[in-house]
Amino acid sequence: MAGAYIVDAVRTAGGKRGGKLAGWHPVDMGAAVLDALVERTGIDGGAVEDVIMGCVMQGGQQSFQVGRNAVLATKHLGERTPAVTIDRQCGSSQQSMQFAAQAVMSGTQDVVIAAGVESMTRVPMGTTGAFHAKEGLGTYKSPGLEAKYPGVHWSQFMGAEMLVKKHGFSKDDLDRFALASHQKAKAATEAGRFDSEIVPLEIETPDGPDLHRADEGIRFDATLEGIAGVKLLQEGGAITAANASQICDGASAVLIVSEQALKEHSLTPIGRIHNVTVTAGDPVIMLEEPLFATDRALKRAGLRIEDIDLYEVNEAFAPVPLAWLKHVGADPEKLNVHGGAIALGHPLGASGTKLMATLLNALKARGGRYGLQTMCEGGGVANVTIVERL
Image (cartoon, rainbow, N blue to C red; front, top):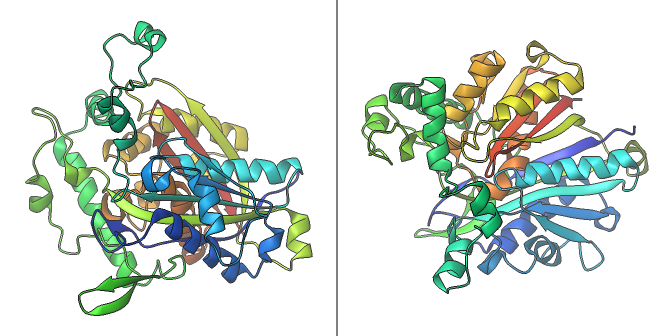
């Protein structure tokens, strides 16, 4: 089977809800990372055969095929560049990356961009379903689905609490993990670890125009006492806004090409896709599937967890990476070494390719070879991507 190579991976710095990226339309934010990727790699925009863009809330400003609209809004792509928008919930752009890799591996395409965008300020989480329900147009819960799952209303918050109880975590465990996320993100930011992956975006501030270059959600003065004092989301539970991922605006993109394209366009790869895996399991607890998806990915790749130098496990909720560490027997010192979504934000459909940008840069900084990325997703699905740094 042909290889799939990553030439570059970029992302915006995260913006808080109503924060520094609130002035950016998601179409233009998506276009900005696509243009940056073309400019940084030097690829001829006309050589890009497809753009696969992840987006979860496909309504309002993210409706009418946001991936195609982002392409049309670019400077370097255009009307002849196809695009498609996909929804695998939080793993949408990780799935975009895996679809792009599969297209290249199959030999049907040579140059594909995988990307993601989400403005959680402009298209708030849950509004696409809530709007239709409010207008009397029904919900996702069909009679057939109700018959199989009577009385169940899918909730990631409920799944997170179930995960806490199943794996025996305390609220203090979650809060300490959250604090570490902020501390690692703070250290990475101050050391300039994110500089090479971030696409600066022009923003307006009270003091005039500026560039958004740093993740807005990091609490540089975070303390355990402050995190522990945040109100519980459910009485008797353990999940709070402080030990869960932050609502975030952002976009990200990865250029994936064949060996032939490397030669034809004089490109230098930074990584090779070693394995792509997706699995599904219990849709009620839903957040646990990365544990089992990792088992399958490692087996298919012929690797042990000890062979992996760094892991990015999306911090949707603190119990997810904690349960993953416990189940897989992984080294916590290799996990989310530059912080995770608790500090940096989780821009839903943009998080998959965002994490790959961070993972590849962290591998380069530490001289590592293999990196593993996984993501819990609504409905009990999980993607795992194993990349080899080149």
